[in-house]
Length: 153
Image (cartoon, rainbow, N blue to C red; front, side):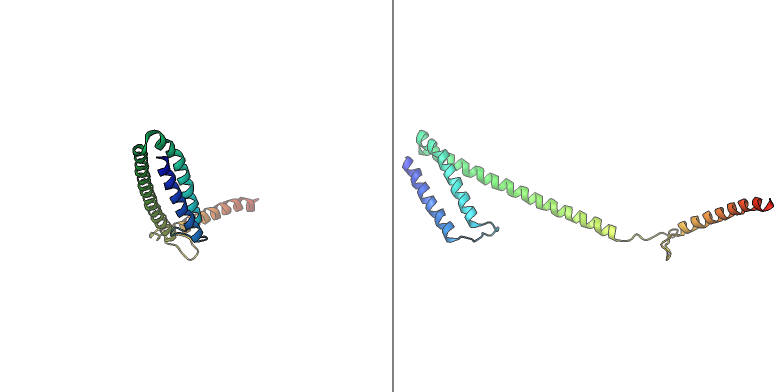
């Protein structure tokens, strides 16, 4: 029974080695180097073989097949969960981008002043001009009050 696993291992390493030799320097559709993928597959295959051979030797081929089936199911579920998480992340990212763009667009739009706050050429609103004139009038009346007593002396 151990020879079946050994035969599977030999055939799988031959195939992945041939792939990596054939595609040196090439990238797959996601932009990852094919050599990295092939090396990762070899590494996973070696570790899987190292972990499953004792099961095959102790419990037989049926238990070995059950372990492999459960691993395949686990990997499939993992891929689905990661895919959905990345999909949610992309959706949240798009929503956040839309909110940010909306906020930036609102900040870029100048607010139209109300009638009391109409802005003149100097960038002053009507209310600011009134306050400034009241301040000037207040200062000029104080200046007159302080100048009068000094003239009397």
